[in-house]
Image 1: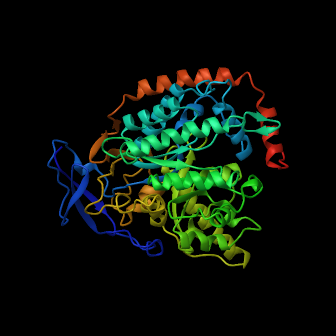
Image 2: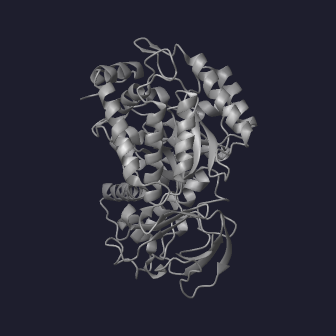
Image 3: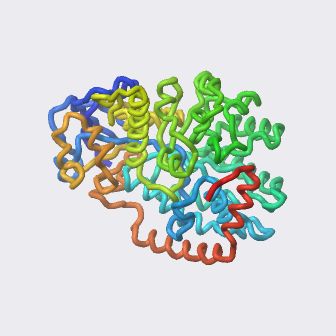
Length: 500
């Protein structure tokens, strides 16, 4: 592949978040060859040594998102009305347990089949690339069988996305009343066998180029302390990382409070752990010492503000984590219930925190002349912040010599960005105005996966048709279940008192 000179506006490398309030205007140029960035060129003009044309229409800022906390396969239930957008966390859990629940003695008989996972995973990965996300941490909790896992890997590899695919060590309830996991031993053996096999086959590389790698999703800590120690020691000895889990707390997750403290007291808290959401850190009755545990261990948190606010998780923790020196990045969580793009996540995180700061001043009867947090701060959370959260900041997350060539180019003449091209602060245009339609070119590992607004690895019309067909089948299966009864059962098991 021929080298391509690309243009970037901004500070190099990214400075700490609290220094990004001022505008940036310097122009930097970069050349990449194959997979890594190998040369830094002094600025003068945009030039290309490839056969591609019209570099003049590309925006002056390159975005390299590393999105944390993502469930790619769930795109399959996005298209069939499950879940409805009015549900909160408990309803989502009920829907997810239904759509992934085994309905027979065989591990292959599930409402969501392995082929369904392939359709949803492929669509979800392509949606990420279409919107300019080049790398994700994927919490894959539909690991119902070896076939489900293999299809998830296959779809991810075919998409071209960079992905840390965190396979879940978790079974689903065999009964809701009483709440029981009758086949957990069988499922655990299957999941750990394939995790161990994949880790040993090529040191956790699930594709020859290392674009897809193996991680662990582990939401069952505390049920069996001996198993926790055995499993986490095993995967760490195999260098499987990151390890990701959910941490919500508050009214919708009281049974899952103080997760950081529990992991620390069990001797399991290390820098390879990502706590998705971590909203309990800001809830009433929170444990402030958990912030210190996070910082001391090097563990991180993934904030997904769009769904956290809508599903009742609580207030996003991203900016508080920055203030406390804790690693944090932005994500979007479930592709089934919120946008598949990072742009809303950046906007919601930024404006939510601005609103909180305004309220603090307003409660004292004062106003604010200028916002102290810039769009650049949200941009950093979505790029280098995500890479730091996943502990891969030496490889991706910013444009630097030696880093992998995961690069996004925007169309400066698009409807949304045409008035931003002369702005001294390109972060403002990307964070506040851009959408997936403004993403013109996407490179992952030096490979062009989107060119002139079109995905190259797969024809989207065929992907969409398969997605709709398989989603319709799931919808027919779900029609045989009483969802409200399922939600009530889960409400009872979580010990909550939810209002309609």
